[in-house]
Amino acid sequence: CHFWTRKAAYASLLGRCTTPRDGWCPTSPARALPTMSASYNPLQTEDHQIEADAAYARRLQAEERRSATTQSPLHDVSEISRNHAAAPELRLPTIPSPAKLVEGLSREQTAGAVFAAFVAVKLGLGPAFAQLTCVALGLAVFRVARKVANLDDEGAFRAAFSASLCLAFVIACVGVTAADVCALLALGAAATKPPQSSFTGDALKTVLKAERKATRGPKPRDFWGKLQRKFTSAVDDFFATLQDRAADVRFYDCDLFMVCKVTPPGADPVWLVGAFYQWHNANAVAVYVNRWLADFASAHAAATRRRGAAQQMLIRVPPGARAGQRFRANTPRGDSIEFVVPNGAAAGDVIVVAY
Image (cartoon, rainbow, N blue to C red):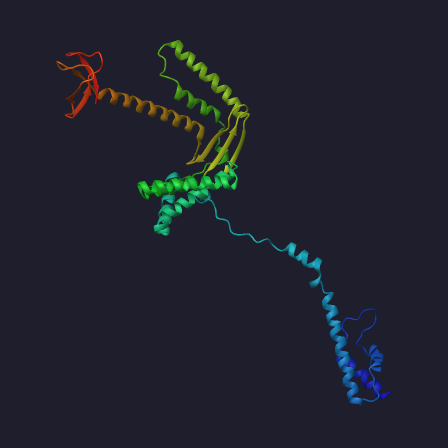
């Protein structure tokens, strides 16, 4: 009896239970009694039997710790998922737009800030300024083509590559000044983007005014002609205003500038670009550009005709000449040219010779 009491006391000292379940503990003396009797070997001495019982108690204690660890809330899958869902989302810092940085400044102060930013960028990039300007232009065109024109990746990449190649060609022809102008315009447009609330809605009306200025001739001098012209313009502007009010208006923020697409009912879309504190009607600008190109082509054709008329001179057929015979004469510039007497011309006749 004394032997079993010593073994039970020793086992209770080695593995004391701190979390009993269901009213029993695997390392308590009450639990240790059958355990000790199960591990008892009559061939072992008393000390060896005590050590064997102590090792068995330690194994029970280790198993209890492992079971407690498995049932811990820290290893519960649902708890881990809840903790992961409750974790704050990682957000990268956003770069504020130039329009926000210069908000509240006057136009002169904004111009100074834009110029200072241009100088800092140019000095910071160094010799690679022109090349990086071409790359930046390509990225901007790619973004506009994808966001505004709804092109696919291949079409947007072609547009961006074409824009970069054109700028590189211009830089090769005129120097780095072209890159400086592009960078200044980009920084200025980004810092002076107008808000959406500043859009008045007069899109189609502005296009009609541009078409009238480009196609109409000089103003009439009589009273009825002036009255008829004003009445026609007022009627056109009235219906254009109605179409503008019923149009579908969409805004696109392209970082460097704003783009507005106005689609009046029954008319083609009108595109406007917001930069430098104003909304610029791209369709109206296209009307003026087309008119300028037409005037330039007609002026070039007229100049060509005048040059062709100036390169002719009158020559009197010398005596004894006949049709098909070749002669030489001096031009007003002093050059010597050869001409052929045309059919039906006789000696003493005046003929026109081109030189």
